[in-house]
Amino acid sequence: MTRRAEAGDGGELPPGWAGWRESLFSLSALRRHLVWLVAASLSGLGAYLFNFAEHHGEEFRAWLMDISPWLQAGLVSISLLVICPLRDRVFPGTEGTGIPQTIAALKIADGPEREQVLSFRILLGKAILLVMALFAGPTIGREGPSVHVGASCLYLASRFARFPHHLVERGLILGGGAAGIAAAFNAPLAGIVFAFEEIGRSFEKSNAGTIVRTVLIACVVNLVFLGDYIFYGRIGGGLHTLEEWLQTIVIGAAGGLLGGSFSLGVVVLNRRLAPLRSKRPLVVAGGLGLILGALGIASGGLSYGSGYPAAEAMLMEGRQFPPWLAPSVSLGNFVTLLSGIPGGLFDPSLTTGAALGQLSVPLFPDFDPRALLLLWMVSYFTGVVQCPITAVVILIEMTDARALTIPLGIAAIVAYEVSRLVCRTALYEALAQTFLERMRAGGPVR
Image (cartoon, rainbow, N blue to C red; front, side, top):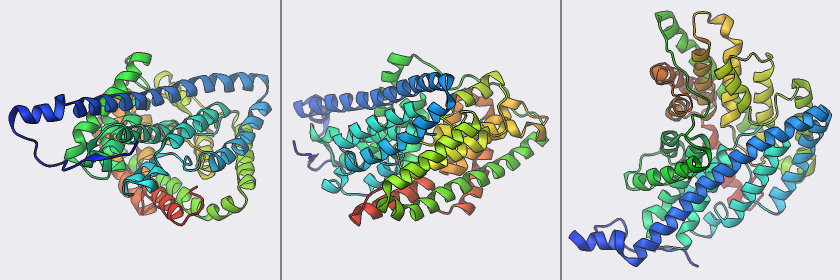
């Protein structure tokens, strides 16, 4: 079935009842709404599948660790030797977090080239490879693949119904990407903001309605399975003294510096490693896998997975972790991103931020520890992705910490400005550009 946009879309509808009938009640309109509803629901189901896989992957790894830490280290080392060849030979185009690929798709005109980035094969491959990785234990989150799967679901909807031109060009992709973030974290506002701030990099009024509706449907699908929940849990309290407000600026600057350095390292080494990855893919995959296995042994297993359980325990229970948690998770995520396997960086970045906050508690004795952790989380995360509005909104939705809205905003803006001094091009934008260059050069798009 060939993809087509409605001719003349974006123009004026006929006045009165004729306009209502054409946009809502005609057979083509009813088909379009039904196809969109199915696609939006599938994007939510994709996010739920990844949530399910992550939870059971943690249980599986805990079972392996009880048997032998070396068994788990061997699994994570071997996993890259399995996932990378599958990615390259069976599912090319599924590499990376998925967010740069979604950004790249918006820069490609609708047609065969875009279908190399958003297709049924990409959707299926992304899901299979991410689930394998979530069980094996590389340091990854699931939000990036959720974005890529959501964008693919909504874009592919245009094969089965006639959508307005502006939706085929951008709106469906933006809506699916937003739904992926929103459903992954039960954070609908963050999904909407991320679509405008990072994926689309502009506010598009003509697409806003579709983006919001898609996000809501995807979140409702997850609510059916998971119920209404707050990702980490409710956190109260705020800042009470001038000294705390001033220290917020210091935390923002430090988090932005560290996060920006992480992003710069990924961008630079990803480019330099690309030729070797093309010529000696198994050598690179095996070497990076061995590093992940060794890191897991050295950290006592703290580097495996997304890091979400550790962040939740620090925030909600005040649990203390060894000082090597932050470097272990950060380095593990760094190595995993260089491997190019499907997987995200939201959860590992937030966990690294929380661990940095726990390390800094003696330096900021007047702070409520949980508020301090949140400030470090928003600062480091903003430093990595350079999306300050998304960072603030997603943490507020994850914790219901509305009293910290302004402090989090201050820390995020400071972190953003400092990060830009370190890494001039935002991480996702840089990776998207690299992806496009390799795809158009006809080489491997890792």
